[in-house]
Length: 565
Image (cartoon, rainbow, N blue to C red; front, top):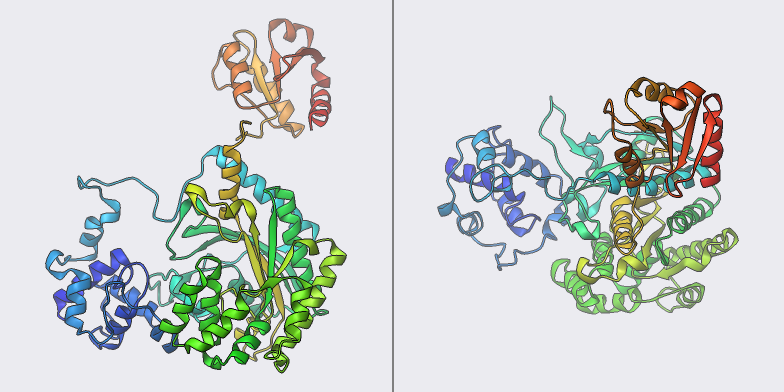
């Protein structure tokens, strides 16, 4: 490619990430293997360097499985036509440098050419009321994690790229890669599971029950009202160590049940399946072993796409024989409970599959343990559940809220929690390939919050953004120092209190502030109260007032707060 074409390509990739848009296609494969991109692109082409490093992380099978461009671009088209048709060479001016690219970037400029102040695509701000709801959800999840005796860890928001590469299958294309920082090639974490496995291997841990709540990043197509973002929180709970079969797995299922029950967002279902069962089905149906993971990734889309589209992907993009795809369809459409496990155990195709039979034995045990833990009624054995990430090796599960599937103008919300067993992931980071069996679950806060927001729209109760318990008000002028003394007394006693920042605020304005913000009590002080060594305690909702001695104030406040709770 000429220098001008490379500059045009760099400008295009800075805006669209890939040749054909926001997702990789065969057009990227064509460009990658054409030899027109330098093996080490110059630093003057930062977007080309990022693209080249990212495409190098794809395996050969992943590259060949990339979809065609929607406009019908064929893999054997000449590179010149590819550039002409997909980069709009004639309509774009080559930027002279990276600074000029940023200056002309459309995503930060309006039609007038002025800077548009906004959050990046796939992200959002949260106002105080929204944060109050989020904090409630977080606290509920934390309480359940603590109830199970989990300990908390923290890992960096970015990892060495090679730590993340090759762990997510086709989803590897969604990893955010960073610019070269002092010789280290880094990427933002895609989830909290792989960093946890790295942490376990690096610290030579043999058993731990941990939780981790933090942001993760994915170059996905966002759907904000459905809780799908590019930056979002995950709340992970994992058990690492060698234990009796299915006991840790059952605890994870119980934990999902407890969290969703405490959040009270309506009816829910916990779908379960087993990777060994899926592998057994694929093998029995005639899927080549090297296609197990790509086909599993296609099956994973059944919760979002009809079977016809999934079948088309298997045949047209993954190269699967149509008759084999049809046979797989007979199985992945099935769902039920223990009776389905027994039926499939005796299926003629699956009788001889050791993998499938081992999976059935695990699920039967999981149902037994879940029954003892009181959460089996929420379980559904769903053969269409696949979970596309490559590192899963055993039981997999997802939780779906009925409220999130009702759709409407805002669309449906996907699974709100998911996870499974990944016994080989830690071994990928250990020099001696020593494995530590692991199982875990992850809650998607944004999806839970999206459903909570919909629920709140139907309610009239005002959400409190503040946790203030007492507002200290003055009934006359010149009471600033007295208010400050009362604030100090309340804070020393651990009572959440605030007061006006004005020297002589109006009494009605102070009382209105307490009412508007849902502050349950007001402590009133005036000249007569100062002389008598008392204060008045006012109930904001009932407007009832009582006179209290100042040295008894904190005791009375705590008693009243306990009664209100």
